[in-house]
Image 1 (cartoon, helix red, strand yellow):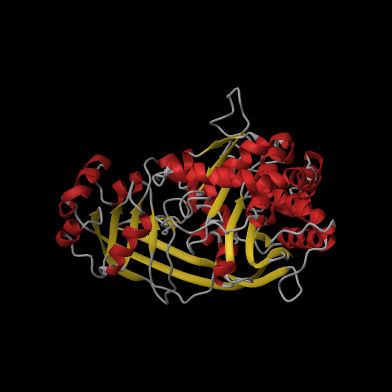
Image 2: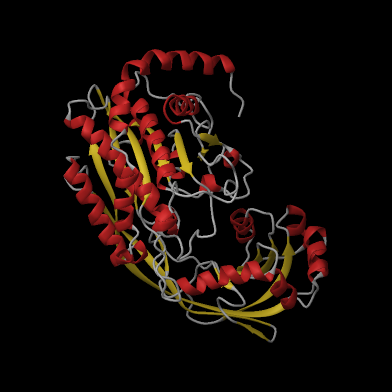
Length: 498
């Protein structure tokens, strides 16, 4: 995104005038953020006792209580009618019986296919399975999809978009390929298998008869008795050349409500108290895997959560000394991130403070480790910064100024590109603020071999580096909470669709 250099220079000058009087004060309270304090909190939050903090489970409830007590002990207010928990229900949806037969092949759920759709049927349905390939207007004009199961070759495509296009064209359901290689599919299927007993968590909604089956490229080849390379070519502009198959499918659904909660502590500001800065992390993780191993989630996102806790300590200590921020601050730890950013979505749809008064969201998700890109680097003092310049021309400059002034980290923007194949911008809780045009910064350390594994443990956390990252976030937050004008929303949100 292009920026005028004169804006950055002028803003830097303004920052020099404003912040210089606060240097000693900000530095004093930043010292409340220590490696020892982060380690003590994370050792408990990411312990086996928490059982992986799976959404709605015992460990997540224990973590919520731990966080709420922390904010209470700091003297922060409970903003939910005097309480620290924003309680709500999710729906756990499981599919007790999912069958798919094509020709004489009876496919096995979470082995031959992964069911990613919705539906609840009284009896099995029969339909032709036709091959569409790419969901282009040209292909849809060549293949009759109405009332059919439709084979989609969506490698490199936005799967959600193409599925919607084909269902809107009258398809009865979809069999879709989204990735190359059997090994990649098998890893996904194994993960779905390990989660199948728990059900999918989401918000309760009426059932849609939308059977959608994800298969590997090799399995799609087998279903149509056609080599992969021929399917690839036919997918582009000759899908009608692939012979249709007879299929039968059945889906039965069970739903139960799962109570869960966001946790928050509130520090009221002074003269600008109606404006609110939100500092967030998610405190849930993925629980216990199919082999009974606890996924402790020390980095993801225990690191972000204890960073929020210590940043809250720093602000609370200043407040006790009579130095309260001008703007109010909401320390927000959300649930259900691992299930689809559910806790932050719930907060954004049911905000405790009006979204129009929410000036910024600072989101912290994985800040305790060194990733693949930096594991062999001579200088490993880095942090990835995502989303900081999309909605406000000031926010990135403010963060960079505070980094230069206080911490000297390398701010790496490589994952802030709209075409980032990892789509990290869409994968953490700041997204649910940005989609409401609230300027955000997402701090992130990148992925490593222990990501979403039982080996993501406290002993692998780089606490000195994590401390430096947390101090940068504190200084940027201090600046945003105390500056004269809130950051303007003068950019366009070009990344609204997950």
